[in-house]
Length: 310
Image (tube, rainbow, N blue to C red):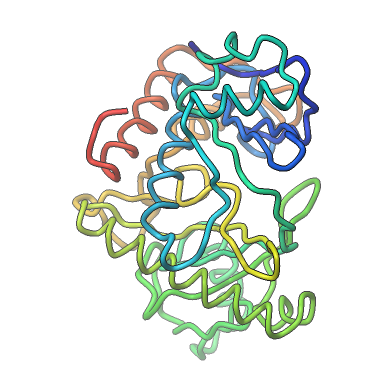
């Protein structure tokens, strides 16, 4: 079953994101990860089998592993409890949604999210590499490159490991791309105490996860977290260290100096770049082969991290 839309009669939909449908249960939220996939900020019409389950189950794995580092928003992911709770919240004939919800949903607390994407980079890749390259070209004098407040050597290569993981936050934009900012700018936005705490938590969670992943032959090149406030405490919310929020590389094939294959929607992006498509809505349908290869990559990410089949 490929789930690209959900509609639970009797429940109020709180948010519909690119991937997740969130329902308001009154004292909590039901988060359902669909099989929708987006590229270039456009949600495509074709779903990827099991994608939502992979995202949910990997997140639950990391939430459990890092709960001694920082609390998280999970109340339950048990399907029996979910069915019972949504029924009490007003879902009509809640049992009919069991198959759709099982494995891809969780009930979470309501928290107030900080307006910051907490990005941690262990390797120089993606938008950071593009910005670094542009700054180096503009400088041209071999002096250290300062990237959003972080000083880096002028001779780094694409995908090279950082001397140490760095915290490079960004804003959360309601439309378009988030904007990369310095940690100092983040502190100006939310205050020094909160900013320092976000940085500390993000780096600690990244270290715990990247150390574990390394044992599984996986490099977590970078990742982003969302952190919220609940009763004066910071908690980890949304998703955690999934192929949608992180760059996972195979340690065996890792070779700095170029872009690395990753366990995510790379097949989709590569395919779309071969088309005469202007990267605006609506997106094109995906061929069966691209769907299959992408689904396999997501499932492989789950297996490599968790150590068992989905």
